[in-house]
Length: 493
Image 1: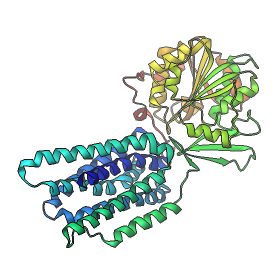
Image 2: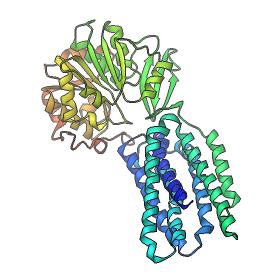
Image 3: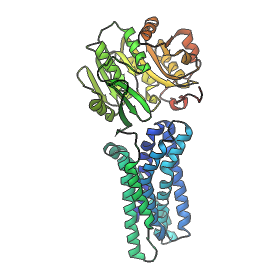
Image 4: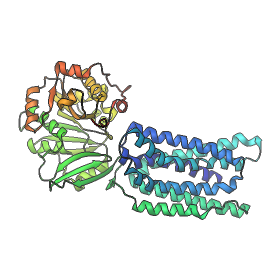
């Protein structure tokens, strides 16, 4: 019994930690800071719970508290779901305050209560000082195994099969039931007040489960990586917007693939228009899929174009098929894989075009930003091939400057496409970068931008060099993308 209780309590904490990150992502995004906040608060809760549990166990009979702690911890794991979802409607955004507060709400109290269980189990098992090391070591090992099992089961199985709501409610209720069973067992063995659990704790679990059923959720579907939904454009009957977590990720016109709603997509289209003769089919590789807006555009304006899309999230691909009209063929293929892995598998010199539009929250996954990643892009491109990528940043634009410096370390010809205020360093948002081993037609790209109703500037040469300044080159060994990125404009700007 003691081994099972320790295993369960430790495992439930790790389930809460992993699921908690997924729970808060729709409101604050998935960034290094989000991960850090959840992990940090979980570790703090474990430390606090273990310290407090051990201290209380020395002053009070653990048999009185063991079952109530399990039931209370499990009940609060259930209650975390509605609490975060109600709070998330207010605490939205990637600012540090929202991230820290929502992460704390998601994990601290239930994790601390459950972490107080193992030291109380240790206290119950200590018959003499002669066996202290063996008891502590055995139960510590069992608790660690519980955490390991929960980590692998959640990350590899539960997230893929169940929604986060089901994982949290299920874990919490299992823990509550286990606490009730422990209480019953202790009463049978010890009598008195041992194992008694206040009815109110069971009611908390019940109320939490009921609130979980009605708590607002921004998700139509919980994919392996995102909270996803598709919404109709009220101003365009055939327009659909794919939202992933906090971002409007893609816009797809189901009736007209040449309608490009987002400015950055029009900028990418302008590059493809200007760098290859009109109508000529291309061999294109797309790093990141989303709604597959650019592959659909190329298929429409350049019949015969062969596009391979590398999309890491199978759930997004399923949404594309079911709600966004994606029809795959030998000319439009989707491969579910990390884009860096897919790049490494590309044949040398096979692609006329590589499009970078992969995002984890507001940042490009760091492994796609480095010299080593861009070397793979360069290898995949044919002579005269073009790499075009979407980036997001705000002043001081540290990430965009660093990525441009990295591009210039790999490619001899690089351009920045952005609004004049961005090029001047006064504003931010989406920008598009272009790189090639062959000279780029800056004037033709500028004309194509105007043809797509964009007043963006084309910055190259000395102006680009001045914009980049002494920005660092990103490498696999050092790519602090999340630290360089400024996700939102400053208030009032």
